[in-house]
Length: 216
Image (cartoon, rainbow, N blue to C red):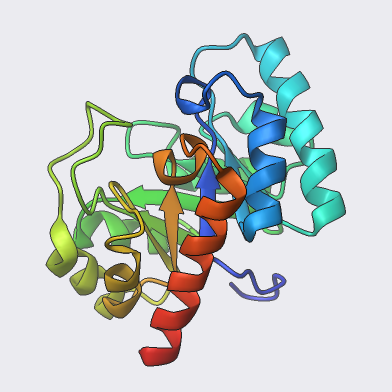
């Protein structure tokens, strides 16, 4: 990532208001960080722009105190408004090259990739890391592309010179396998956000990633 501060991608937690059991984004993310989350992505598709900025600003203050990077999904305007650490774009969002031009060289740019061609294009467009998947079927995104499986994840990790975060159906049963396939971290939504005990869920996943990395 050139001269950017190195990021620990181990446990990348993505917000989802619909899965959080009525808890606020702040409550969930505070607990996730207490359990070991190393990166937070604010993802909100239903709120107004004003509400998104207000919610993201609260998370920005929390993550800054905790020393955890905050990434905003898709909404570059919200990311810039709250001085987030970066933005993450999917294949149907703002083109990565345009996002990079607008956020400048110092902010993190993440790009979703479901195959090697998309991954290599993201590298060319200035991505700092890739969200690769869906590795498994996921109820979080019903419109997601077909699962790429561990072999698809492994292929991208083998050929791309960027940190890869595995996403899509990742949980305690397969987190270690994702790291063994070459991912630097796992991105989770329901495995943490929907957990009854968010701290414990995050702690378990973080430990699984650490153990898998030692074996790799």
